[in-house]
Length: 604
Image 1 (cartoon, rainbow, N blue to C red):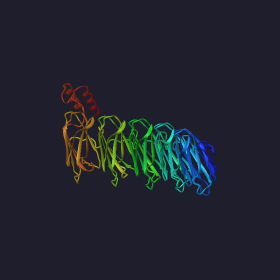
Image 2: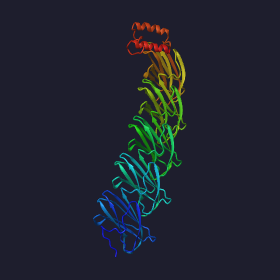
Image 3: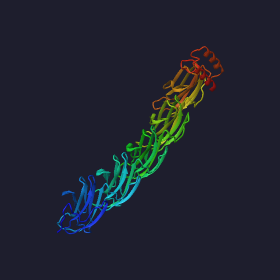
């Protein structure tokens, strides 16, 4: 006769945490074990038939400190399971037996026991690591890690067995135990993404998700904890980083940023199969949930303006685990201000470059308040698939000041309000579809632009507007001098719509402009001494026409500031003669007009 009374029964002693106990059920046997637990503890127990015959159906019953009916029970043909969260402190009793007496059976078995918190069979999960382990029949693998409120943890368990039968299941438990905070299982890659709310030691439990059928197999655990993760190092400005996503991989990078910095990041699938969907998540210095995220079939994109100074973390992974995928990828990274991959844009120049898949091209130029800049990006690829997009950023970064994209010619016209270094970002406007191609950048900054030189009284010149072209001329004038400028389309097809803009010596917005299908015309009287800039371009919507034009210039001035002008100024200033003595055009005659005249006299 076998006899067991609960509480009090404890034939085989205490179940130790993270252990496997091997025993045998004799005919009619009643095996009892005990363990102590506190409210909130979570216990996982598995009883596994290890007999060669496979006839044993291990049945487990769990009893509380006060006895009574069982709190949980389970039986199965191979692996029986109990998962229970303790509500009463004290000594608990586990009863193991064969589930039925028809037919009566004997056999050996193993009991796996894990009690959380406290379980830590396989040690601490280190940040940015991969841990390789194996699930035996009925196995319960436990790991721990410490975390603070706001930390974000990403964990992936990957079946690496040759059979592919293992479905790794993960459960994440907090410092106080209780029910799991997050769980997931999958046929290949299981995923947990969790943001910590309570500081302390967390426990990860890994097991096969089901006991029907019972399965064994090897697996890898990928672990990343943010902030702190930095597996692949610092993202350097204006660089491309090439890496590979393995099955279940979590790649992490960091960079430092200040409030106002603008960062652009693109992750590009470069694998031959094209199966990788790169997903990026950007985390701030304090961790927490991601600040920005994106995934795509070829090129994923993050554009973010920083609000908190510190170290930022970029997490790159395959966007889904169904199907699980591997592949190579490139990360393009640009941080503004600071980015300047392709150098300084020189005034009145054309720069020819190429956009690769996911490319971020950056340029800089210096400017003063009042400067007027014109920038055009022109698709020069044979396919015509590139839609160039340009974004202009100020010396302090932040959001862009101006942007444009178009199927052929994108245009920015901007008058500077803050002195310093400006950044131009060029990219393909969309990632659907992702595209590559060559392009030209036309750049003009006024005052200072003078591509085609000085024009004089009664000049008639012939020039050509190329695709996106910006032609600039200058003339020198004194207060009261008159001018007349006419630009005529003389191209054979007549597609050019000439547009003319006149800028004063101090830059700023244009003083006057005109455009027409055939002839653009401006005329007036100079109210400020100095050098004037004439800008000629195509005025069509889209700015995509080309053609030859004629420019005619007429003035009653002599295109310089010389001794004759000096003699006149002395008389005009002495007599407070308006408007001729008002050299800066501000409506007042004072010492500033003397300084202005002296400057222009010295320059010319």
